[in-house]
Image: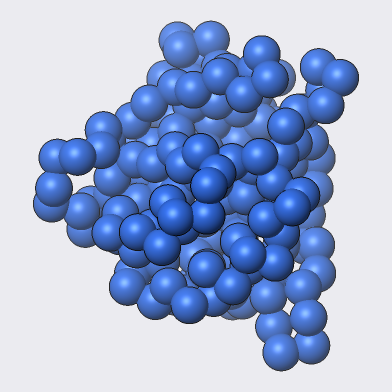
Length: 168
């Protein structure tokens, strides 16, 4: 099971759509971590399950602020991160994911990629596919569950191509 993970698209959808189409035959689902949920309209038409949460710039109530989904038997906690105060640290995020008995915690909000194993929980922020901060480029992620093992990668897109900047 492989998911492509986006966050903080902020109405700039063409690259997100192009990347999803590029990897469509290699992914099983799409994850969007908020800001802006309406950006995923074209992704819904691609025939893959789409899991999303809303962020601090999403004012509809179609999507939850947080959710836990199961991918290939592993629990994935998803949130945008603004309510967990992720600008300061990932402590609240970690404890919430632990309460959810999650194997992975996904968040966005900071526009800065982050990937660490904290106390046995993989914590990942794919960064922003449209408005990067903190010196990073345009980034997104992959989450793979295979044979009961989870791997996560943060990828950076540039004119030169796509490169992996971190993986666990």
